[in-house]
Image (cartoon, rainbow, N blue to C red; front, side):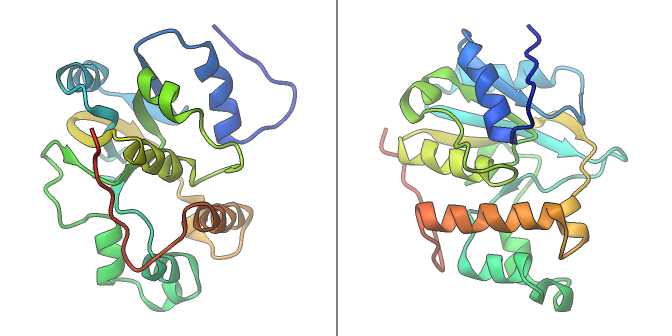
Length: 210
């Protein structure tokens, strides 16, 4: 089914139109700038089938040269916001706060529980949508994936990184290339919206209640 819209909407709003039409057990959010590698979707499907408490999972994202994108991450904190979304990032190219946020220290070949995953490719259990709801359309671009994973965690679902599934993502990282641009403005708005909605602290932890 092809759904065409006559006006420009954000990432969350556009995906919600399709999610509302979905009738399957799982919903796959997939960016148009991706290439599905062999058996990737089957591996995501099998992970969900074998682990009923996992509500959201995502693959290992790769750049076109097959190097890793750090697509599973920690929830944002005050320090990660300062280091990543303010002029401080121009002064601090490599730092422990940024590395921790990007989970650079974990074993990226191991299936494991993480805080959140980039929305370029997310496999979501339909039961999660039934209990948590749709993507928050107040996030025009960026941040809706962080928000959704946190809401899933609060509802008792787990979020898993599945690096045995590979997806190539032609990631432009527009908001990281320039401090002041339309993309960085959208990113800043999303961070502020997330903080107003969920609060922001030195450390955020989530507990599974199921």
